[in-house]
Length: 218
Length: 228
Image 1 (cartoon, rainbow over the protein chains, first blue to last red):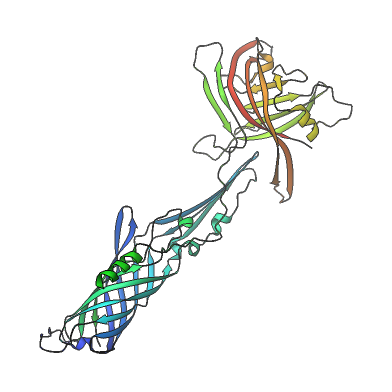
Image 2 (image 1 turned 135 degrees about the vertical axis):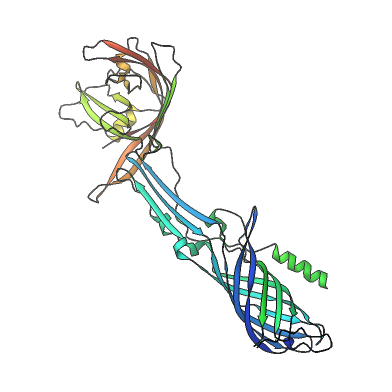
């Protein structure tokens, strides 16, 4: 069972020792910048902690999370005008929520064995997944056999929303007990996930956010 | 050292990498290739001119998908070859606006009604001015004016005081392919001709009595004239 009794300052903090366990929490991410809109989503995962020396430790995590609330829309329209009439085709792609799988690799530093606090920094590779049901639809109309191209309906969301991403993490951890800790970190994505020429916007879509999680060492 | 690291972090954070998408679908915007616009008014009243704009491909009524179209029609009238560009709305039988050109010389016996590219180029020389009486070597404008309660269109050759002209501003080749219902494809070749025009128009009934007069001004059109 988890030992929830807070450690005293005179004892070594066992949370800094090697171990692994689950992660649960939430992340608040910006999903739009003009105006700024934030969206919160759950975080679930696990971590593995390996001390390197008295102060430093390596922490590797595997976590999944969902960020809802995106309002990305790409439309492609082809119009063919001929003397006999006009043909129009239109494809629309929407991105509303994204699921991420991430593998943060962090260096963890704590001042002493008695310190409950630790600082974190590292990198965070990530892969994302989109809900296909929300992504694509296509409409076409023709008059007098004037038919526009079907290319607008053939656009794939993956052409414009990049799957892989890398980010940087800075954070702080506080051992609440020997087996439970609170982790607050800021995650900054380094790649604009949405292609400007696909969504016809130069807005950034970054996999960034402020994350707060509880970690329990098994 | 900490400040430098923080600065680097901030620098990286605010310079996120962008990548463009590849192989995007081709998007063609609406192009106003063929149209006729201007002002017309009922000559018998003091009503202000009404602006008209028949742009091929534009919706006739906002709620419906019917669009303006145009076509070429050729025939031999009274021994002379004629070619006309008709702008159509929802009706296939009553064009809203027609520009008709008549050859200056009579057609040869057995000559087909269609025009060749050379004949059209000789007829529609940029800068050439046609009177609108509809006589051989001249043009005619026919308009379905909205003020008419009767089904007779207004014609420039029927004006009680004929006046006006059609001026050829430019001419270029226009080739397109049309897919038929059976799936076969036919290539259509035409001249795309830009005109300016103004004319007085007359409406006559079946007894040839003049029952209406109109005039069209500040007219500009790009017409579609097919050749063999």
